[in-house]
Image (cartoon, rainbow, N blue to C red; front, side, top):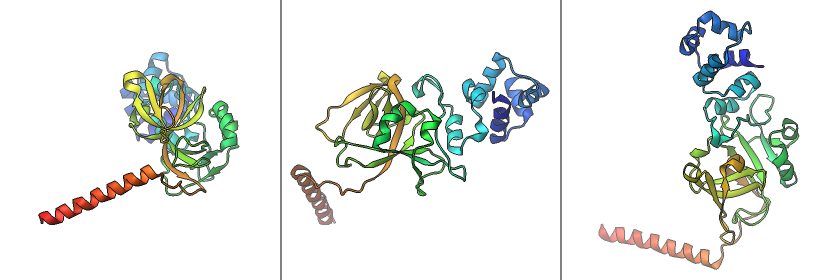
Length: 266
């Protein structure tokens, strides 16, 4: 059980004294000091108060050594996103770090996709995935890359590597966001979304390729969501078809007409 270590870690991160915390959870300071030094352990009632004070679930307080986590994972835990829509039980994202204790970007290629559905929460599976770094991405966020297959998201070609930012609070997603979504039934899918979580507890998903029909995914079936950041592909984008090219020409003509009209008004 990691409660004593976690209490010290969380208090120091928030720059609070033992007096501050003890007063907030309504216990004497020596009593709280005993919790941090493993001299005594809080009752369930006090443990609930501590959980509410730090906005961290009891499961995490007891089972996860927060002092060993990277900054990005700590920020996710401290954000307080520990409710049904983020998962019926809190799960700290399994990931790897480099020698500087900074998060790697793990690569899930096509061969690893089937195994990822079963091993996404297994440290032994995650640690054997290839890793890399992209220096222009934020060090305070967690990223992972997935190789896609098929033509449902054209003009992004099959075989591209999609890098996504791990999303803890799914309510923050906006309509039109492109996301990598993991479900146990369908595995990994890369789609644009309509966020219906608040109204229908579902996520509407659709492809950029209009030949594919949209559908919905129940929130309870979703295990992970990674919001699209960028993609890498060895292939050139496909040539625009005649209809798309015509639309571009019309848009260009409209823009030129607007410029002419502005000049005439002057």
